[in-house]
Length: 407
Image 1 (cartoon, helix red, strand yellow):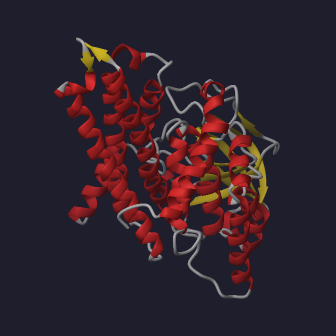
Image 2 (spheres, helix red, strand yellow; image 1 turned 180 degrees about the horizontal axis):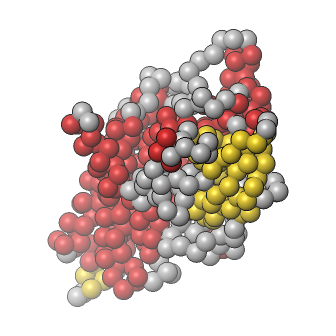
């Protein structure tokens, strides 16, 4: 794939019109945390039939499982949904939303992607029917809870949340932080360690599915943060939360939670490229128009070579990220997905490029770029998180290097 097809461009234009009508006028409320993004996202799903398509894919998957004709469990967000142009049509909304409101993509992706994907890939058929469909259609909001105050990049090594057996039940304790959708989540995938009195490094990793309102489960108010304000982020506190085995993902302690988490990390990282593309495209469009309109020393600043250099570098970054996205779509069409190392390389380059382009856009706008009135200020704040979540730049570099060195 080397360019968007006519049909894909039609879909892009339709989604762009939706964003201009339903999101752009409410950007201030979304960015100040006064308007949670979920009703707008549900309207997006209904308008473009994304909920109906998700329901159809889910029902076909469950029918296959019940008939014993089981495919590989759910793939990444881009490959899930089948061959053809399915990957492209899943990427386009991400790109278009990120031109104005990257936080909405994060809120949507964690619910529809990470939380639902964890259940679809490791859960029993009954668990999928109980929780996954409502997440895939956005009827309910999901959160994927792995990060803790003392862990961060060392998610498993620093994990202190525990599950302790008590008869036929488990008792969960611990806290999680930086949890996307945490304040509003209806369904929470909670990852912790099984406490059998053994040393921390030797403890099994278990995953449970929790529901809002369970006794002992507390969801904080949204945290204040640098950017991505339209994506509510919070903390979770568990104090003696009792759960049955029916909430243990896969209903067995033998499910490999570590490998499931790695699949989730790969999905997150590939999604960052599409997010970065939307941010870069918008920064470039705004910068080109500003370079034409802004006059200094008697002529448009676009006539100055240093401004031209900035615009040229932005375009190079846009082309490179777009080509990475195109490759991802082609792999999905072929029924393949990127390895964790490939996903890490893709995320590293895309995140760094988005941050560089956004900061150059602010610089090009000068004093105006530092003002909240101009959108490049918001995009610069939003772009920074791409270098942090789903694994920091440093973690991506480590993953890529270890793969190259065979260690």
